[in-house]
Image (tube, rainbow, N blue to C red; front, side, top):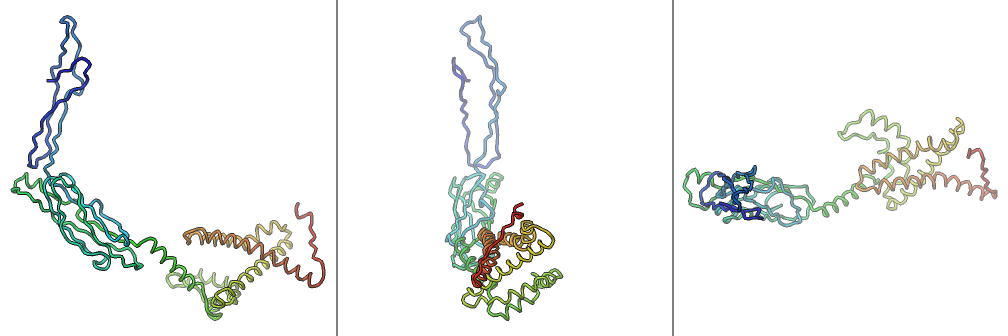
Length: 371
């Protein structure tokens, strides 16, 4: 019986629960309040009192005599090769009663024992109420560039160290496996991988771009490029014949093997400048012939021949490069070539010619240009 004194709002009911070592299903019982009454100091002034809506409580007894379910926390793990060791955690859920042994072993996948990791086989022993244990696998760091490899860790049937007959209670309470197999992926160290990738990229770029003779350059210029499958499509043929004059023209540039590529660089810059000046002059003459202003010619014809290809080149560089350095360098370099070489060469030649002839270079500015 509970007795509430004046001003008291809470009381507790203590019920003893009998704990045994036999596995049982979860059970429940109810606690019900009834026959509430008030003790009034005056017999003639009764105090109103009644039970609330929650006058009955259900108590669920959860059985903790199950030995537990054993398994890994995830189906897949990753470990860096340079870590030296991988730790796999085995957890115990749905009970933790009694001592249990769990055999385990590693199984080869793409990774091979002895070369990529050390083979391990043993037994995990869980003591009473223990819910976690660790399996430690040594990882071999061979400092070699290789793709990701994997191996597996498997758990065997658990062994319950307890004398229990084959009764229903004993069978139900025995330990079981949950997630008994996991995959471990050995990944390459990021710093080492980035260093090797950078070195390979630089080496492949030098091999791909570099040439050793004019013969090689002209052979590459007149040869139709194949697609990824080794076939020559109609599109490839059309693009080859359209660009053939330019390929033959730039095949005249000295090979990159001469003077460590500096001769190729200087001659290529000069040829690009000359072509830019020629394109600008041709566009200017065409605009004059059809009656277009120089400003319109510059933002249409000249831009179509110089700036538009640079836009696509910057897009390609942005997609293929990890950073934006190539895109920004292409834009600034292209503008520098267009302005300083395309315009500067024409003015420099004019200045040299007038200086050689002893005449004065005079530029006539027309007011009609600003209208």
